[in-house]
Length: 236
Image 1 (tube, rainbow, N blue to C red):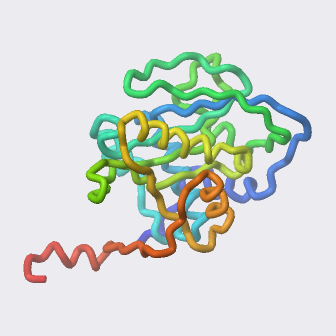
Image 2: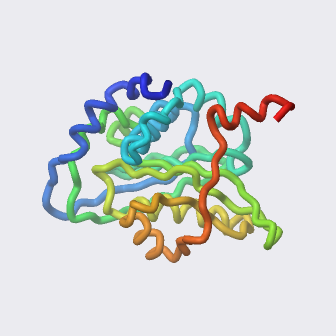
C-alpha cells in the first residue's frame, strides 16, 4: 500500500524544518530561470511531488518512484505529452544552457525577505556547472495537452504545480503558470486549465488575481485502483 512507502531520502526530516525557516531581513536580488526538465531532474521532481502530497494530506496515495517517473516523463518530445518546467533560483546570473526545444525564461527579481533554505544541498540543480553550485530547484509545474471540442482547439492541462515552502509568496507560482500560458499562446492553443482544492482559499484567490475563472459548476470524476482495474475484464 502507498502508506508503507518511505518518503524520498532526506524529505521527511527536511519537511519539518521547512515549516519554520529563518528569515533574513533586507532587499535581496534573486535570479530565476524556467527551463525544461531533463532525466537528471527526476530525483528533484520525485521529492517535490512528495512535498505536494504532504501539503494535500494525501501521502497515502503517493506511490510514485524515481523509476516510474523516469520511465514515463521523457518518452515524447516536449509539449506533445507530459512536460515539466523546472523553476531554479540563484544569487548569481545563470550560465547559458542549450535547449533547442524551449528557450529558458530568465528573470531577476527583488525580494524583501529571503528564507533560509534547509534543503539547498538536496535540491542543488542537476544541470548546474561546477561554477554554478548555488543554483537551486525551487519548484516545478507538470502539464499535458488537452482539447476543447467547443473551440476545436488544443490546450494545456496543468496536473501539478508546486513552489517549495521557503520560496513561496514571492510570485514564483505566477512565474511558473505564466510560462505555461505563454507556451500555449505561442502554439495557438485555446486555454490552460487546472484544478484547485476547495479548502485552498489562498490558491483560489491567487488564481483569480491572475485572471483565471474558478468554476464551481464542475466536479472532478476519477477512476483509479480497483474501480479502474475492474474494466480490465471484458465482462463488465
